[in-house]
Image (cartoon, rainbow, N blue to C red; front, side, top):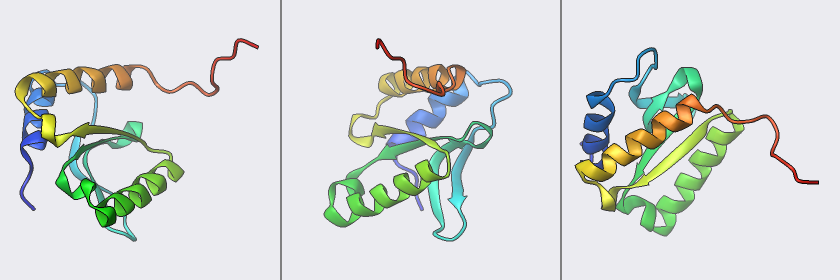
Length: 115
């Protein structure tokens, strides 16, 4: 399957400043039964990245994407979504910075409470 402009821009941004020790993988198949793939993944951290394009705007595409993301969450994945329609080198660099921030700040085990 050909890669989108968003995927190519994000790949270039992630590769411009490599993240030492992180296992970035493109087209990562996280569920063998459904053959679902993430556009990008850091399997050791269970962090996935999706560049959402036109397919996600159809009713069928949106439902399939929801099923995929729900299953990924059930399996312990965190999934980041970026809009393909906004892809350019500048936005991709911002996305890559955000990915690094998420990788460096693992999720907390419980939400903060002011109670």
